[in-house]
Length: 185
Image (cartoon, rainbow, N blue to C red; front, side):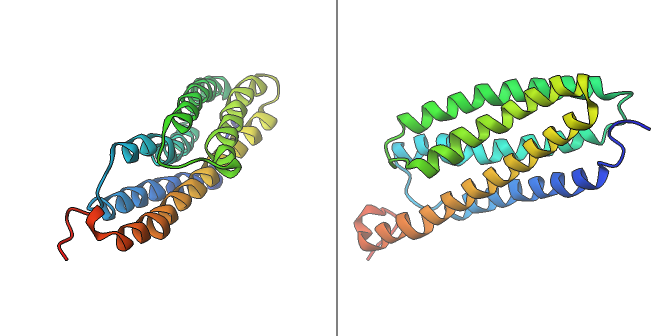
């Protein structure tokens, strides 16, 4: 019996969920593609939209890696550690983008959902990699917690982005039709 036995159902639920949510992100971006885009919008995309797809992609990767028939826990623990370090670096980049973009002034909830919680999740992956060498069972629970945290952060952030576009940007556009060059009224 390998350490990953018994986790199949968890990753069969989490992985496809992340994959489906990536698909929905593409649908949303396609639906809003006809809205006028300013340079500030492009800056904000790297801070607000792209990280959700990255987090969902990481969850999908973790789920796929958990389904590989590893000979032991050490090779996959190494993958968790590498993904965790990569995620930590990416979170630093996203945090810089949050500070640099000018279209929206982030509030505490934004800093929490776009910087702090992802930082915690990726740190959990690094910790799970180390912990798996000492205690496989606890390491597996930590990586599962990190995957769920990234999934929920991605859901929150995707929802936040869509509602901002629909309820704030669309309303502004409807109030000022001259701001949309595609509109001819």
